Length: 475
View 1: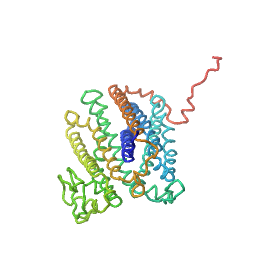
View 2: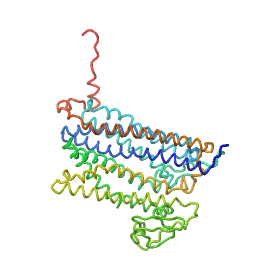
View 3: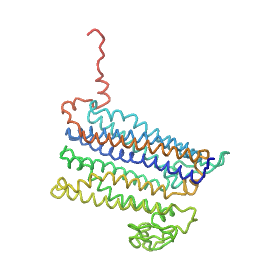
View 4: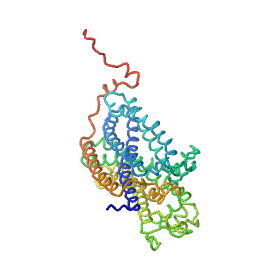
């Protein structure tokens, strides 16, 4: 006889969605960041005419295509899961999310789909300006996609501009103000934090590959150029993430989701001059948090007042508490990695500026090679902080996660699909790493001939004027 516990099934639904979205979330930040670097390479190519910039563009556009393809394939899975695993949630938010996802299709996929082919296959067919234009349109489209998806997720975090109606199949949310739905209180700080984090991931990948080439004494000039472009962006963003973008988001969380903030810092009792922990552990059973902390720092960051009282978890019913153990640890992992990035960026920049010693410091180059893994871990830990911290609500204080799952899906069905995804994603990730490793080992292609590049069409008009002549058979 089959035993199906609703609580266990809900947990499996969450595990499956968390697994698939976490795997997918590896790729969009990389594509956004690498896209930024491609635009910079393209601008440099147009302005200087130096063939090395086109050479770098030809190399990185191949890697971008691989990342983009895996990102699209893994993203489609999420759309199906809304129907298979979270049908109640989909019905509840459908009237709100419909416009946001439609806008993503119009503003994002049109741009990406329209210019992706020109970007990926235009190295031997387009001039510098035309190729830069195609690349910019693809990057803008990808950024628009992140924009609309973040709007939808931000509405789940801080819902606004809606009303709830019972239409006979249960309650549903209906839009009352498109502007309020788009610009929810959490959207602005979250999208800035997300884009900056994505640019850090992409630039860290470029830095990592450049450092790898220097360690192997291959493509030395191109490797130095990669690092010269990416390292200043990475370092500046590392500082901004911690002290500006992250701090602004913490303030919004304190004002709109105080239970999440309390879980992030393991704060069980409302406290004035509340400390901020650097490392530690929290115990929800004894409602205590121990570790290394800075007195009054949390109160100051939230309200610029050391005597400000930060709301603790005891102000909320216990069945509305997030899992403080998980939220506390992943949040502090993100924070500590953010501080580490400032140290890595500052140290590498100092070695670069100081008599150009960066290129000879193998220990520093190995750290730079590892930076891509660290930035991906930081990005995922930030995502986990946001999503675990919202629990037990799938739509904050409106719809519980336990009430949002598909009611007719059994424990065994979800367990089987999780096993299938684990096997599939291991294969997909192995293929991705194999292809990426092959591309990096092959290295940048030979620089194109200057006369050949100058002969390529640099406008749509030139493309049409240069159509090959079809033989009439009389030649």
